[in-house]
Amino acid sequence: MQKLSGKTALVTGASRGIGRAIALRLAAEGASVAVNYNGSEAKAAEVVEQIRAAGGTAFAVQADVADAASVAAMFDTVLKEFGGLDILVNNAGITSDGLLIGMKEEQFDRVVDTNLKGAYLCMQLAAKRMLRQRSGRIISISSYSGIHGNAGQANYSASKAGIIGLTKSAARELGSRGITVNAIAPGYIDTDMTSVLSDKVKEAILAEIPLKRIGTPEDIAAAAVFLAGDDASYITGQVLEVGGGMGL
Ligand code: NAD
Image (cartoon, rainbow, N blue to C red; front, side):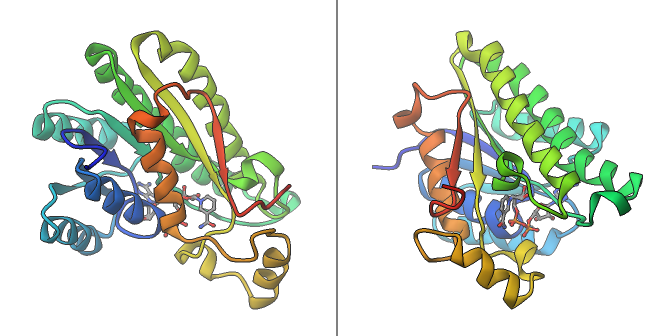
């Protein structure tokens, strides 16, 4: 029995990595999925094709989540196509690492605009619709760095900590209308974002993970499906750390 039959979902930054895995899992559980991408049209089309080949429903929708007009146009398209929205996954994110003392204002703004403002813009439009429906699930991808901090990632950590505050406040505001708002804080997950790290850094991170393996996008997708489904209907305002015990 599919857990999300009849549900509609929008996943931002879903052309690759964690977003792609979440889109595929949501679709495998029966949800119709809008696959957002910014620049990677061909990769988003591949995700859509994979979902359709498995008998699911999906379409690709372009938007830069840091741009309000672009996000508004995306929601117009998604709501027209689906007639509503049950699940929003704020996954789109970037890094631009550097030590605080040398961090450029542009570098700070770009990361916060994409990771935090992007989540706010999408959350606001999703919430407007979900309030009318009196139901909905909002899941945002925070990070271990947003909880514990990380040297060289002041901008990224600030954006990911901001997602936690956004999540908790929205959970308080929207709970009475049957909408849950939660965050997932991945630890170290093997994607393009982390492939740039040196082997030495990767080994040092691995040494800090009690479960002794690097996480996969599918580990995060499993948590997202849980939070999107009925089994999580009494969970809101929470940050689920999925990192093999990293940071304990
Ligand atoms: P990734 O770089 O493979 O994927 C990020 C996706 O976001 C890409 O598809 C990219 O095109 C999209 N994106 C970036 N800017 C965008 C914009 N302005 N508008 C729309 N889409 C945009 O990285 P990933 O590891 O799959 O990361 C996914 C999420 O998980 C991010 O929010 C990231 O911060 C978070 N995260 C990742 C890790 C990890 O270890 N990989 C750990 C903690 C949190």
